[in-house]
Length: 145
Image (cartoon, rainbow, N blue to C red):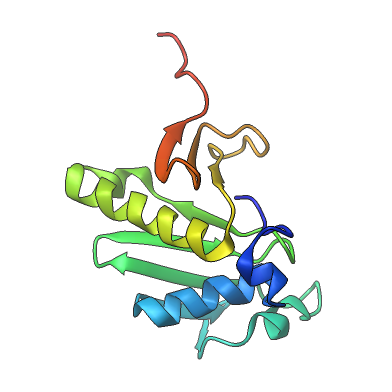
Protein backbone atom coordinates (compact mmCIF):
# COMPACT_ATOMS: atom_id res chain seq x y z
CA UNK A 1 0.00 0.00 0.00
CA UNK A 2 1.14 3.51 -0.63
CA UNK A 3 2.51 5.70 2.16
CA UNK A 4 0.96 9.00 3.12
CA UNK A 5 2.50 11.89 1.25
CA UNK A 6 2.59 15.66 1.72
CA UNK A 7 -1.01 16.02 0.54
CA UNK A 8 -2.29 13.84 3.38
CA UNK A 9 -4.04 15.77 6.15
CA UNK A 10 -2.42 13.44 8.67
CA UNK A 11 1.07 13.79 7.20
CA UNK A 12 0.77 17.59 7.24
CA UNK A 13 -0.50 17.50 10.82
CA UNK A 14 2.65 15.63 11.79
CA UNK A 15 0.99 12.25 12.36
CA UNK A 16 3.14 9.53 10.76
CA UNK A 17 1.21 7.13 8.49
CA UNK A 18 1.53 4.14 10.82
CA UNK A 19 0.26 6.09 13.81
CA UNK A 20 -2.64 7.41 11.71
CA UNK A 21 -3.62 3.81 10.91
CA UNK A 22 -3.29 2.67 14.54
CA UNK A 23 -5.39 5.68 15.61
CA UNK A 24 -8.01 4.74 13.00
CA UNK A 25 -8.19 1.16 14.29
CA UNK A 26 -8.83 2.48 17.80
CA UNK A 27 -11.30 5.16 16.69
CA UNK A 28 -13.36 2.69 14.64
CA UNK A 29 -13.36 0.13 17.43
CA UNK A 30 -12.04 -2.61 15.16
CA UNK A 31 -10.86 -5.62 17.13
CA UNK A 32 -7.05 -5.65 17.17
CA UNK A 33 -4.55 -8.11 18.58
CA UNK A 34 -0.93 -6.97 18.62
CA UNK A 35 1.85 -9.49 19.11
CA UNK A 36 5.61 -9.69 18.88
CA UNK A 37 6.49 -13.24 18.01
CA UNK A 38 4.13 -15.35 20.12
CA UNK A 39 3.69 -12.72 22.88
CA UNK A 40 0.41 -10.76 22.81
CA UNK A 41 0.89 -7.17 24.04
CA UNK A 42 -1.10 -3.92 24.24
CA UNK A 43 -0.92 -1.94 20.99
CA UNK A 44 2.08 0.42 21.31
CA UNK A 45 2.63 3.77 19.61
CA UNK A 46 3.95 3.42 16.07
CA UNK A 47 7.24 5.13 16.95
CA UNK A 48 7.90 2.42 19.56
CA UNK A 49 7.36 -0.36 17.03
CA UNK A 50 9.37 1.35 14.31
CA UNK A 51 12.35 2.01 16.61
CA UNK A 52 12.75 -1.62 17.63
CA UNK A 53 16.04 -3.39 16.80
CA UNK A 54 16.11 -5.14 13.42
CA UNK A 55 16.63 -8.53 15.09
CA UNK A 56 13.64 -8.14 17.46
CA UNK A 57 10.56 -10.35 17.16
CA UNK A 58 8.35 -9.36 14.23
CA UNK A 59 5.54 -6.97 15.28
CA UNK A 60 2.21 -8.27 14.08
CA UNK A 61 -1.01 -6.28 14.50
CA UNK A 62 -4.05 -8.30 13.42
CA UNK A 63 -7.13 -6.19 12.73
CA UNK A 64 -10.68 -7.45 12.25
CA UNK A 65 -12.97 -4.80 10.70
CA UNK A 66 -15.64 -7.50 11.25
CA UNK A 67 -15.44 -10.96 12.78
CA UNK A 68 -15.16 -12.53 9.31
CA UNK A 69 -12.48 -10.30 7.75
CA UNK A 70 -8.88 -10.17 9.01
CA UNK A 71 -6.04 -7.88 7.91
CA UNK A 72 -2.54 -8.73 9.14
CA UNK A 73 -0.38 -5.61 9.16
CA UNK A 74 3.39 -5.70 8.63
CA UNK A 75 5.74 -2.99 9.89
CA UNK A 76 8.24 -3.40 7.05
CA UNK A 77 8.82 0.29 6.32
CA UNK A 78 8.41 3.47 8.37
CA UNK A 79 6.22 5.20 5.79
CA UNK A 80 4.60 2.38 3.84
CA UNK A 81 1.51 0.70 5.25
CA UNK A 82 1.55 -2.99 4.39
CA UNK A 83 -0.98 -5.66 5.22
CA UNK A 84 -2.18 -9.04 4.03
CA UNK A 85 -5.75 -10.19 3.52
CA UNK A 86 -6.78 -13.77 2.84
CA UNK A 87 -8.96 -13.44 -0.26
CA UNK A 88 -10.80 -16.63 0.70
CA UNK A 89 -12.33 -14.62 3.56
CA UNK A 90 -13.87 -12.18 1.08
CA UNK A 91 -16.44 -14.61 -0.31
CA UNK A 92 -19.84 -13.00 -0.81
CA UNK A 93 -20.91 -9.42 -1.37
CA UNK A 94 -21.23 -8.55 2.33
CA UNK A 95 -17.60 -9.42 3.13
CA UNK A 96 -16.40 -7.74 -0.05
CA UNK A 97 -18.26 -4.59 0.96
CA UNK A 98 -16.60 -4.71 4.40
CA UNK A 99 -13.19 -4.96 2.74
CA UNK A 100 -13.91 -2.06 0.35
CA UNK A 101 -15.09 0.08 3.29
CA UNK A 102 -11.91 -0.88 5.17
CA UNK A 103 -9.80 0.32 2.22
CA UNK A 104 -11.86 3.53 2.00
CA UNK A 105 -11.36 4.28 5.70
CA UNK A 106 -7.58 3.83 5.46
CA UNK A 107 -7.33 5.85 2.23
CA UNK A 108 -9.37 8.70 3.70
CA UNK A 109 -7.34 8.67 6.93
CA UNK A 110 -4.05 8.84 5.01
CA UNK A 111 -5.38 11.14 2.28
CA UNK A 112 -3.86 8.86 -0.37
CA UNK A 113 -4.96 6.09 -2.71
CA UNK A 114 -4.44 2.53 -1.51
CA UNK A 115 -2.74 0.05 -3.84
CA UNK A 116 -3.04 -3.71 -3.52
CA UNK A 117 -0.34 -6.02 -4.91
CA UNK A 118 -0.73 -9.77 -5.28
CA UNK A 119 1.44 -11.83 -2.96
CA UNK A 120 5.05 -11.81 -4.14
CA UNK A 121 4.41 -9.07 -6.73
CA UNK A 122 5.39 -5.89 -4.84
CA UNK A 123 5.16 -2.85 -7.10
CA UNK A 124 2.59 -4.39 -9.46
CA UNK A 125 -0.78 -3.30 -8.05
CA UNK A 126 -3.89 -5.00 -9.40
CA UNK A 127 -6.53 -3.30 -7.23
CA UNK A 128 -6.67 0.02 -5.52
CA UNK A 129 -8.89 2.46 -3.71
CA UNK A 130 -9.03 5.67 -5.74
CA UNK A 131 -9.64 8.41 -3.19
CA UNK A 132 -10.79 10.93 -5.83
CA UNK A 133 -13.32 8.50 -7.34
CA UNK A 134 -14.19 7.19 -3.83
CA UNK A 135 -14.23 3.59 -5.00
CA UNK A 136 -12.16 0.47 -5.50
CA UNK A 137 -10.76 0.25 -9.02
CA UNK A 138 -9.17 -2.51 -11.09
CA UNK A 139 -5.61 -1.44 -11.98
CA UNK A 140 -4.56 -4.42 -14.10
CA UNK A 141 -6.36 -6.78 -16.39
CA UNK A 142 -6.78 -10.30 -15.04
CA UNK A 143 -4.50 -12.84 -16.75
CA UNK A 144 -5.96 -14.57 -19.81
CA UNK A 145 -6.93 -18.19 -19.20
